Length: 164
Image 1 (spheres, rainbow, N blue to C red):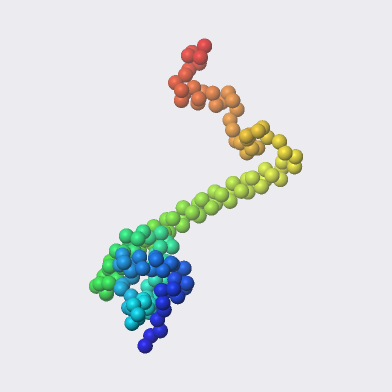
Image 2 (cartoon, rainbow, N blue to C red; image 1 turned 135 degrees about the horizontal axis):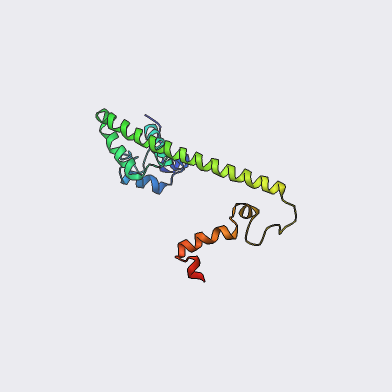
């Protein structure tokens, strides 16, 4: 007979709570788990493998509804392999797009951090080198007052004739 795990042991190994494991079973993500004579759930190694895959799907952002659809297809056996493959290909494309967006954001953050490091190295060590409420970065990148005025007037509908 194959060794089986209690719900507490599965929870400890997966990081899921017992409540979540029961919920996953109730909504069809996990097939009905066999029970011991006393009624306690007993998870087999195949259950653990499936849970590991579900955790991957969840970690990569697949919504519960998508996981349920995948589980339904899985329960159909080999007849649904093509649909499952397509579903995973679509999910992978979405994950790759998210990773690419995160990489761009990481690059932008890294550039801004380096920019601030350069400013920090050039800045005197005494506080108060920039006007209150502004950083030296704000001072360096803001436009002179006279260049900002026309843009403000354009937004408010003012012209130089209206102000006089």
